[in-house]
Amino acid sequence: MKKFVPLGLALAILMAAAVVSSPTTVKAQGTAGLVSSILNNMERNHRTLTSLRARISMVKYNAQLRDEDKYNGVVAYKPAAGRDANIRVEWQSPRQEILAVSNGEYTLYNPRLKMAYVGNSRSSKAHGGLFDLLSLSGQQLRARFEPVQELREETLWGGVHTYHLKLVPKGGASYKYAEIWVDDGGMPVQAKVVEKNDDATTVRLMNLEKNARISSDEFHLQLGNDVKRVRG
Image (cartoon, rainbow, N blue to C red):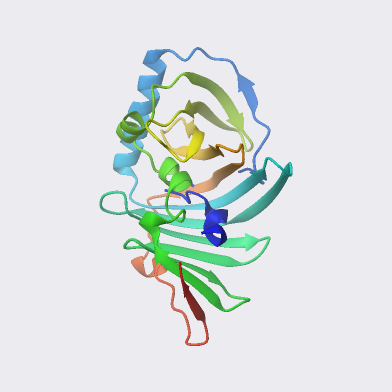
């Protein structure tokens, strides 16, 4: 549903530096040993991450128009059983919108219009790609993507050292390829999905607060009777 695209995959989430920085690229050999070490760090991060708060920024690039839309806000995240996750994103610019994903359902609320789009997150772009990438474990990455062929080191805006991996999906994915930037602790802090028409969405997480106290109530929007609900 196009209204929902600004979140992306979302997430899974996740999930670009005001929005994407211009990182300094350092050439590195993508050896099997280094890739294995990165994936092991991702696995440890995935096991120990119980919640996350962060600033979030996103760039959506239209290849045909050669134009970008930029979004900024805050995100809260808690993993759940299976591929489900609890996500709340409050976009603050260019307009206020709140996305909440919980128990396999999403709500996208526009306060100015007093309108909410609701639907099944498993069958929408609300909960897929980008946030999935930002919450990947090393084991999930191995299962869903071809062996990593491109790897380099980059320092993102803010001085965050990362390993930048290009990921080609196995099977008939709806997109061409993805990229993730993984910090030294194994946390994916930036993700990019490139569609088959070369449109691209890039999400960056900043000011991360890992394992913060987050109430489950944050992922359930309390909407008044004056809010129009549209089933997606």
